Length: 158
Image 1 (cartoon, rainbow, N blue to C red):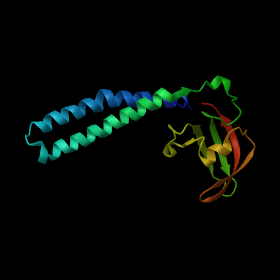
Image 2: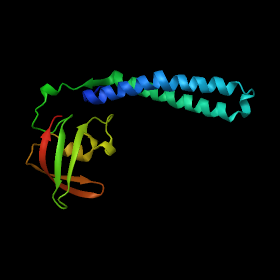
Image 3: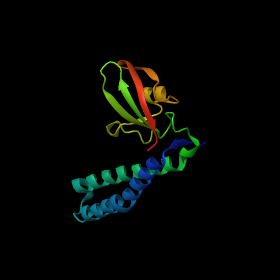
Image 4: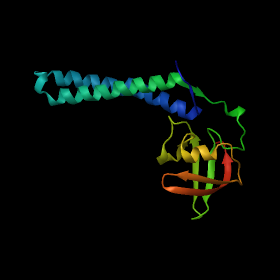
């Protein structure tokens, strides 16, 4: 039984690009390293060979994971989603009611979430609380560190 998840077009293309890089650059480089390490002879005490085998395992594992993810993902049709509400693919600008700090998040699938890029999953506490909200609305969110209180300044689709 397969389950499908939704993803933005940009997130899907990023995964495809990563898979292509792994298969066309990383995999051949690992094979070259293995061939070179084998030339040193005795594989039982060959640190270069062991390291190359470990890298091969990591690359093949990542290829398998991304291939499986891509096969179960559905690219969202953003034309079917209201542009004034926070849903998958929306960029939401918030103002922290306590500190006055402004922060912008893009709501994405779990697969493409990256906190360093301010891309948060719609399954995270903050992402879930923002779903369906419009600019001007207030949101209170309970997170492990306590309560967050935001005012939504804008919702857009870039």
